[in-house]
Amino acid sequence: MSVTSKRVLVTGGAGFLGSHLCETLLDAGNDVLCVDNYFTGRRTNVRHLLDNPRFEIMRHDVTFPLYVEVDEIYNLACPASPVHYQHDPVQTTKTSVHGAINMLGLAKRLGAKILQASTSEVYGDPAVHPQTEAYWGNVNPIGFRSCYDEGKRCAETLFFDYRRQHNLKIKVARIFNTYGPRMHPQDGRVVSNFIMQALSGLPITIYGDGQQTRSFQFVSDLIDGMVRLMDTPDDVTGPMNLGNPVELTILELAEAVIAKTGSKSELVFEPLPHDDPVQRQPDITLARKTLGWEPRVALDSGLDATIAYFARLRHDLAADGAT
Ligand code: NAD
Ligand code: UDP
Ligand code: UDP
Image 1 (cartoon, rainbow, N blue to C red):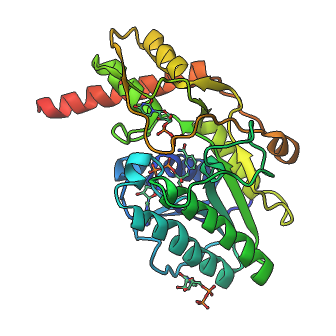
Image 2: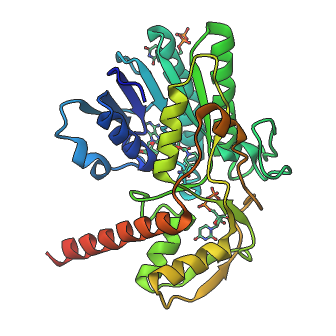
């Protein structure tokens, strides 16, 4: 990472990934402005940063214009869990599309570098496996996941058109499933669901037959990759996959969580959500070559850290309830 101090805007900075990114950017000596409307993010995620004089937080919805002065923008604002992004699908599309337009307009006025948190969902239910950046994807434009997938695809379009039309310095990261401490315990994603269910002795909810696959990346690996991508020369735009290529079935994930927690939870099988992708695995050749980056945290230790986080959270919540 560069040693020169910068003013960095992180939209969605009070969310799971954003809070880790703010922390990393502050540790590197930057000034950080965190912008969030707290739809899925929480002030507690950044509570430990509030006393840092280099850290500032602003409640703001990125679908509205934002006039601030910064050198770099990481655009993470957008709910990421299917439960949350399907809660108000119109707002989800607006967040990706209007949010991208506003942040690109801001970057254009300032001549600032801007990085978009895109997603492996741009590949939809992929017919090419593993997914390389050259694959155009297989996305249903009118389904329940479309507000997220198509919103993110349109945001990518806007990023590349602002580059071609206005010569902006853009970076597009296609992020694959990421887990770790500060995931929202009720956000419905598979890692948080399984761990919370296992720790509470509740049934582990497998959607479908559990044979669908995902590749899970620990949060610190992703943040390292994003910061490296932002620091690349201007001709490096991406899109670039950032993910852990180790692929496993959802059933295997459930078994790993049960084994690690020693839980007596049983497995229950529930209907598969609409358009749930059958398989997903990143090809990270480009990131390896361009960033000299690859994931370092194995699922084993990443799960340990995440289970420890949720166990502490449950303990704190119980203590709060008791007082
Ligand atoms: P998250 O839900 O924890 O964080 C999203 C943050 O954006 C929250 O703090 C939320 O309050 C904020 N937000 C939502 N709408 C907003 C708006 N209109 N204006 C301002 N703030 C708004 O999710 P996350 O996992 O931290 O994801 C962060 C980004 O990374 C998202 O853009 C997501 O699409 C992308 N991503 C995440 C993953 C993953 O596995 N976690 C995978 C691919 C892409
Ligand atoms: N914008 C913003 N902050 C800025 C500059 C622009 O939020 O500092 C928003 C503004 O609302 C505008 C959008 O970004 O609608 C796109 O800006 P651009 O300059 O591309 O387009 P225009 O202003 O011509 O619509
Ligand atoms: N899933 C599951 N049980 C749950 C939550 C999710 O079996 O309690 C499945 C879901 O159907 C999907 C996979 O786990 O196949 C990953 O789901 P998640 O919502 O975490 O991410 P995404 O589908 O966006 O990759």
